[in-house]
Amino acid sequence: MTTPEPQTTQAAEPTNAPGRAEMPVEGRAGADAVSGANEFISWGARSDVGLVRGHNEDSFLLQAPLFVVSDGMGGHAAGEVASSIAVETIGQQAPGTADDVLLGAAVESANTSVISATEQGIGKPGMGCTATAVIIDKNHMAVAHVGDSRAYVLRQGTLVRVTHDHSYVEELVDSGQITADEARTHPSRSIITRALGSDPDMYADHFSLEVGDGDRIILCSDGLSGMIGDGQIESLAVSSATPQQAADNLVAAALTAGGADNITVVVIDVLDDGVAEAARKKLLRRAGSISAIILGVLAAVVLIAMAFVRSEWYLGANGSTVGLYRGINGNFLGVSMSELVGTSAVELSDLPVAVQDQLENGIRVDSEEAGRAVIDSYHEQINAEKDRAAEIAETARSETDGADGGATQETTTTDGGEQQ
Image 1: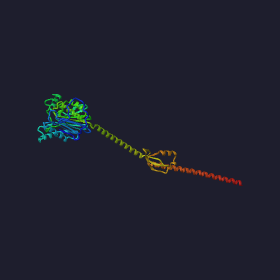
Image 2: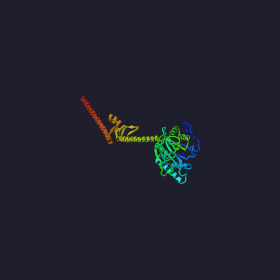
Image 3: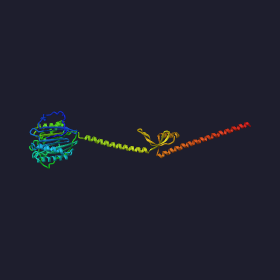
Image 4: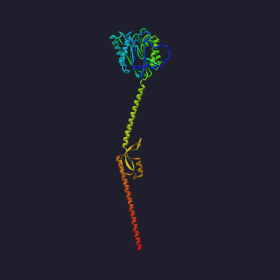
């Protein structure tokens, strides 16, 4: 049974890589294929009844970022019921982010739902199923797992199985009694040690992994892993261009190997793990922080500079007279850095040339009072100079008048002598 995501789309597939002849999967009865994508991941899935079974008891769920594969057990009208209930419950109970604890709780809730369905007469007594679920949230992947369905991660050409089968033959492999290849053909390979639908206290394995751009995640029922080895799964996963091609090629290989069980494969490619975007945002935040610091420093510098400028005083030319200014004599970016705060009647022309030149450049004073005192001193100097000039002029005039009077008297005496 298939429970596809509502937004799945059928994309144009690249030409499949050449290889050995496999059984075609297109158009087969009892088969189902769905693919789709969003900005972070793309996926493809195929489920096939196989070549031996009369019906398909597998179910899968594509509800990005959630993906589930469930292998039903119990025969017709039982296994497919159990797996369908499981994927539906997981889809309803799963978290929206890669939280493996909550995802494990959703799988355990599915176990309760399967048991309750049996008690209510839905399906058949003894029905059960496996469940392997993942949530891929950017560079995080949560995994929850029960049974012998599997999850693999293909990274840089190397396939790694990340789940552990809950089966009798897996225990034999773990103890070193048989090899993984021998487990695929072992007569007790169908004995499951943990599954949904029988034990109310069943618990799910759950954990989290980091995934990255280019990683390929594969979920499958034992209809795939029981028919072909991990080496062939890796080879086909590496050589397939798209998730849908990978799912099709893996199912075709399992059919070619005998197709003894239902085969379900879900393949998800990580397109954008969000790490680059997170790094870009971090860089922007850091740049923003640095900019804020720079602006703060500049603001402080400006405030200090303004305080300094406002604490400065100087005397300068105000047209033809002397003015008192607050600030610094000059401009910054076309803006005057001073303001006229006091005028005077002191004419520049009344001051010495050297002082006039100094006033053109500004004569710094310590305060407004000091500046006004200097202006007063200019007044006094000018007045003193004018008084001295007046005295000199008066003296010169007196001397001139005295000289003129003596000359007149001398002329009169001489003339009188001549007359006598």
